[in-house]
Amino acid sequence: MILPRLQGKNRTLAQLVGVVAAMAALSFAAVPFYSWFCQVTGFGGTTSVADAGSDVILDRTMKVRFDASLEQGMPWTFKPVVPFMDIRIGETGLAFFEAHNPTSRPVAGTASFNVFPYAAGGYFTKIACFCFTEQVLQPGETVQMPVSFYIDPTIVDDPDGKFLQEIVLSYTFHLTPLPEEQAALQNPATANAAVVN
Image (cartoon, one colour):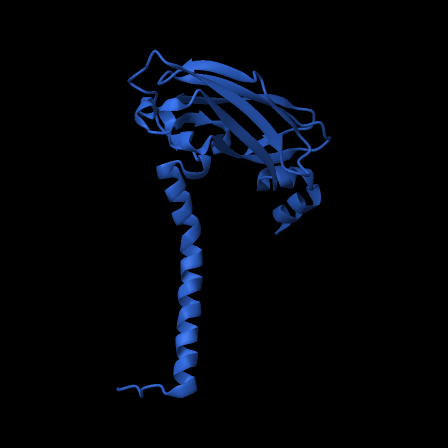
């Protein structure tokens, strides 16, 4: 079957629909592509992730400062246990952040993070971090959450990175919905309805 060639207004309309469809498809692809790009390049202070520590440890040290904040409406208190540490480049460091839930109900949170200056993002490598999973604190609970990391020794070969003396690792906790099991415990009527059905 041969389709007739569109003319005039119909052709313009078809082209416009095609452009809108292409832009919609690109907008959906942009978020995962941007996340991948940031993880690979360290753009915007995004850190790298590794399964183990570095094989190379340099004599040069770097000061790592820790910063903690909360999204508006997040009821926890949240702070680093120590404000900074001096660590050799390539050495595995272990830092702790303390969170407290002062409310009378369980509260779930997820931490976002970045590194400043942004040029250091790709060289700041996390091995394990509380920010990789959602955290749920029970009423009145206080926890210390670890992050293990190292600074990639190749930072000394970077034209910008080799002059860095200090890196800031910053976390912000965001309020998130309780996991279904926790939410069901908070609302017995919902849990009973689920059992009846």
